[in-house]
Length: 380
Ligand code: SF4
Ligand code: SF4
Image (cartoon, rainbow, N blue to C red; front, side, top):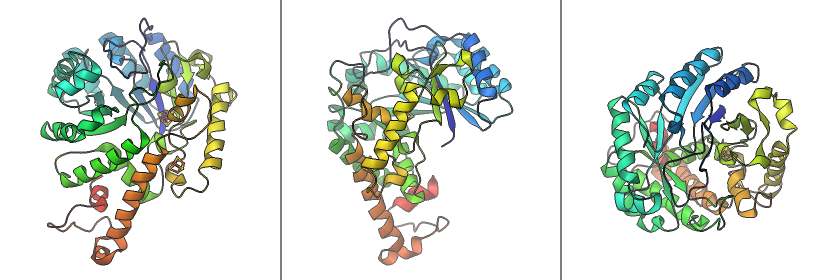
């Protein structure tokens, strides 16, 4: 996993999605001075490429002036390292001015949309769809590449066919996100997707994707196929994320991941103190994450998928237990379902019957054959 620093300019957000677990009213906004401190902290922290993702809350609330100053500060201040940027936003606050600033740094945008307007707005609030689409048009006009995260809840999963078709017909790429239990909510599991349903949904999306391989990209399926094919995790959920991912909150506090920002018990340090890796590793939050790693070794030791799953996401695992480390990611059932499906299909394609000739990433796919896992691998 490449080194990843998530910058959370604010936990504030103008939207009010029903399953949101990461926004906070009256959250402060990160100052440009804090960005300067981030740069100073990272100068001697790790000598390797780093990806910065602006996340939230809603990061565009920080405004054009913040991004106009923050981006060159980071890019020039850390020019010795290889820098990449990304941004996750609902696009409501996108303006031509902001889009031009982001386009200068060729920043890929991730946004959120849960399907057709009516379904989306029933989960994300009245008016969400139109506001996001308005921002999407501005982003596109300025040459920004936007892909969408689609959150499936225990309710919207019933309309999975309509949702897939919506993305397909509108030419939008899709990243699936299962609604998570929230550490902040009084009823953490209200809209969360059951692991069995999530597993079935992944297999459904795999089949739909294979039917329409030339017309849409389902990013999670790409990632999971790559994990199985290479035998190694390649997204944070499927590696030990600890130590390779950090998040910096509006006041400069450092957390293990954006999902913990705003929770004081997960603060590992502050950029103003320029902590080293050793300093961070003495924090309680680090010890908690270390405990999770040990639990994974113990509970997942016999699992065939441990090398490219690593117990899934620690946040998902701790959310149902009020932050305590009790079990691995509850999506384990879903992961096993899709890992097995892909492993079986891949084995069949590579070693079963006439599939032998499909071995090798460079072999051209037969025109008439039904697409398979190897076709996804050839493309991504
Ligand atoms: S806690 Fe979960 S979301 Fe955060 S970096 Fe780790 S695996 Fe990824
Ligand atoms: S699939 Fe389940 S048991 Fe296997 S490594 Fe992942 S979380 Fe652990």
